[in-house]
Each structure stands twice: as C-alpha cells, then as structure tokens.
Image: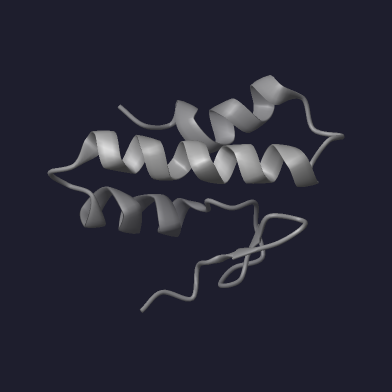
Length: 72
C-alpha cells in the first residue's frame, strides 16, 4: 500500500508533500498498470477532472501535463 496518495483539495502527495502525482507515485502507477495503459490513462483523466474542479487557479495546460502529459 502506498503513502503517495493525493490530498485534496490541494492535490499534494500524502507521502512526500509535492504535487500529486509525484515522481514516486508515477513509477508506482506505471508498474501497477504495466499491461493496461488505457486503464491508466482513464484513471488519470478522472483524477485530472477532479483536480481541475479544485485547482481552478492552475492553467488547464499545466494540469493536463501534470496528470496525463508524462505518460507514454
């Protein structure tokens, strides 16, 4: 079980207090969804939508990169 979960409404990491998803959580998510990249994208897209509602002061492009742009 990870400690790197999002703390809302600021969307910081509960494990390292940086922006969520942090580097550690990104690595964990890559491993968890290793053979299911579309499922990972859908999960992160849902998180992106929730975060966009809380982080209205953050430009949408920044949030998109933060939640989805790092995936390949």
